[in-house]
Each structure stands twice: as C-alpha cells, then as structure tokens.
Length: 324
Ligand SMILES: [Zn+2]
Image (tube, rainbow, N blue to C red; front, side, top):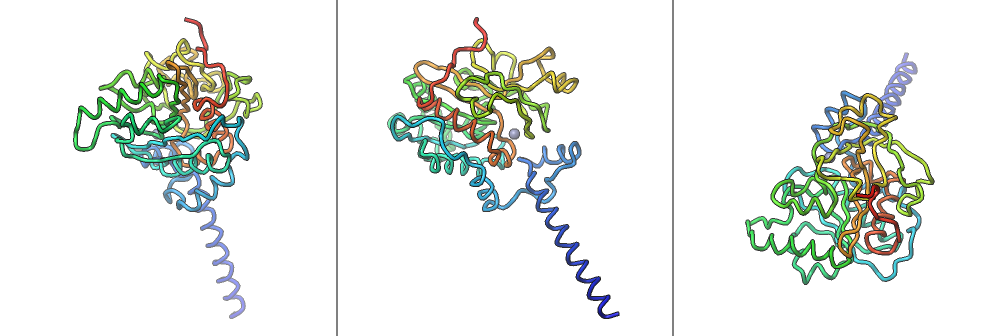
C-alpha cells in the first residue's frame, strides 16, 4: 500500500509538472494587452491566461532568434534613436521591442541604439547626432512635453520633419502610425499612414509583394503567416501611390474574413512599406503588437533590412508601388 501510495504521489507530481510546463508554453503566446488577450483567447484558444513571460525569458528567446548578420555593411557607425513614449494606449510589448532592437544592433554591428522616452531629445541640436529615429509603438501626441509646453512641441515637430527631409531615416513599428491622429496630420504623411482600427487579431496570411526588393530578400520569395494584431489605415493614407508597399494582408487567402476591412474590395491592406521623404527615407512595419513578434526570426530580419534602408546603408527601390 505504502509503495502504491508513493507511486500515486510521484505520478501526481509528474502530472503537476507537466501541467505547469504546458501553462508556461501558453504564456509564450502572451498578448500585448488585456483587451485583445481576452478576445484572442476566445477566438483561437491560445495563451494569455497567465500573463506574459518574464523579461529574462523573453530576452533569451530574442537572443536565439536574432539574425546572424546584417544584409548591408554600414557606411559609417550608425546611431539609432529608439523612441517609445506613449501619449495614449501603451503596449506591453514595448519593453521587449526596445530590447530586441538594441540587441539586434549590437549583435550585427548595423547600428547602436540610444533609447529614451524623453521628448526633449527632439531638440534639433540633440537630434542631429542620430542617423535615424525608430518609433516603437508610440501613441498619441508623443512630442508634447508632459507639463504642456505647446511651443516646445512645435519645435520638436519641426525638428523631426526637418531631420527626415535633410536625408536621415524615420522608422516605425505597430502603433507608430497610431500617433498624432488629429492635431498634426503631417505626421501621417511622413510615416506613411494613420491608424484606423484593427479588425484582425489572429493568424493571418501575409503576401510578399516585392520578392526582389532588398528589404524583402530575407523572405526568399515566400509569403508567410503571422499571429498578431493587424492594422487597417485611414482610407486617405497608406496609399500605393505614395508608398512602396512591401508586405500586405493576403486578401485572397483570407477569403470572407477580408471583408471586415474598410476597403471592401481587394485591399490593399499594407503591413509594411518603404518610402522616400525629402532627402530622407522611411520604413514602417505594422507588426509588433504581441511580445512574440520580437522573437520571430523572419520579422526581425525584416526590421533589420528596413532599418538599414532607412539609415541609408541598404539600397532599395522606394518609388511608389503605383504611378500617380
Ligand atoms: Zn496593438
């Protein structure tokens, strides 16, 4: 009896451990915010219940997923300003996103990151020290000083536009387009789009529209699937006549689900693009809602190529996809 009892206890312990491990795996599907977590849990039954993974575990996953090398040799040491101040909704994926970009620059030698959420870095004299600015899910009026200061905000806005115009790079991921929705329409013109809503938070098919564009080369000509919150943009923005659209939702593969979008017809629903602005360059990718995007090797390679394009190290055709 005693032996049998021990066996039962041992079995229970093993079972409990297996259960804990399964729960831990589920945490790997952590969603970026509670609202979408609840929604996604109902829809695809995945993860989220235990919250997100601890930061050190996420870092390990990022390190395993980082690209081995950059697609281009930097022409000079590149300084990248990573900015993640939020004037509105704050994504929980920002912290690991900033970390992933920092580690990727360090490993590949493509750039060195200075990360801050202090908008005074946009003082023209400070900003000119950088080769590019990467907006990591900024939201709202992110250049507005916390104590008000409308005059300074105006200076910072001009400074950013001048920075890009003068030949530097602007990059952004996910909510970088959900910034300045009203008070500064020029921002959407510079980054390429203004967020409208996110009808799809699920595994979606993404079409590689530019297999030969250097920013897409790491995809080896293939389309792919990704599980994230997918944006659609205001109809007056994200236009193929203004942007070189590199990735878009594959509306054919999505079938009926594509009809949730605001374009009703065949789209496009751009996911990533590059563009020229003045003498400068712009790269944007809407992926990055969920933490797990930052340990997706395919997405990291895409970010890296986009960064090198915007920094001026990777040559790529950024003329609009469709002639006006
Ligand atoms: Zn989001």
